[in-house]
Each structure stands twice: as C-alpha cells, then as structure tokens.
Length: 204
Image (cartoon, rainbow, N blue to C red):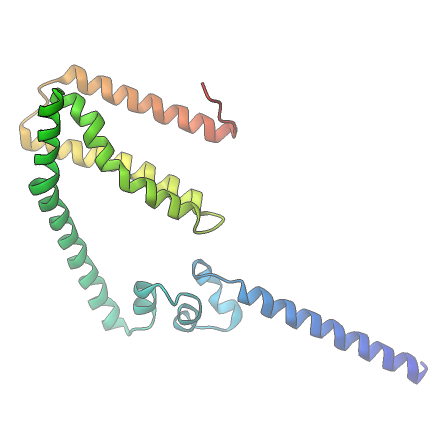
C-alpha cells in the first residue's frame, strides 16, 4: 500500500475518533439529574454524578454523598421533617383555612356540601396546578410525573382521607350523596383514561 494512502487512512481514523469523542462529551453534557442510573456507564460514582448534575437538589446530593450510617440518619430526619410538615399543614388548615371557609360559606349562604365541592376543592387543588405545570416543564417525561401525582392525590383523598373522616365521625350520614360523588369521580377518571388512551381530546 502506498505511504500516501496509509497517511490518508490514519488521518481519517484520527478524525473519526475525534468525532466520536466529541459526541460522547456532548452527550454527557446533556445528562440530567434524572439520568442517575447511567452514572456507571460514564465511570462515575453516584456521588460524583449528583455532584455534577444535581447541584440544585440538596436531598439527592446529601443522600448519595454520605456514608451508610449517614444515609440512615438522613432518612430518619426526612421522616421526622415529613411528619412535622403534616402537623403544620393540619394546624394551619384548622386555625386559618377552615374558619375562613366557614365565614365565606355563611356570607354567601352556601350549604356545607356545596361549599366543600367548590371553595374547599379550589383551596385544596390550587397548589396542584402550579406543581403540575412545574412537573410538565421539568423534562420530556414530566407529564407522566404530573399524571401520577394527580392520580395519586385523588386516590389518597378518596381512600385514606375519606376513610379516616368516616372512622372518626362514626359513619356516613349522607350515604346517597357519597355514592353519587364516588360514581361521578369514577366516571370522570374513566373519561380521562379514555382520552389519554386514544390520544384525542375533544371539547364536548
């Protein structure tokens, strides 16, 4: 083979390797915090990955960059913090939200059940709007997170919250209204499931 041809082949091989390496680095720069399962593919430990790509996520960085004993203490502290947040949320709703809702209902002449499905539902669901928008804008699979959050919240309210209220109150005084609300909720969930399965949303 002529030396000139060998030189051209070496140059072509060099540029091919350079192109591959540059693409690998470009792809690596496009990684996000949600790609943590790919850390070992780039010879990075979990701590190194979250330090590089999860700079704004304090919880993830703390969890993956501590020892085993530190992880146990961190999980315990998060559970304590979660319980404290539930207590604060309950006390805030009991001391501020419920009296204000009752005052609004009295001024507007709304019956308790109607106030519950309008004003209370608006106050309870308003934060879900902002969290859903943030989830959708978080990435390509953000809509899956938002759908899971909304579905999980509905299931939690319809089972745990409603069941706890029934147990504390000693039963359901208005069984017919409860059955009506449950059936309407099931019908709404079925319609949403049908729309997402077909991929078509019609305004009717």
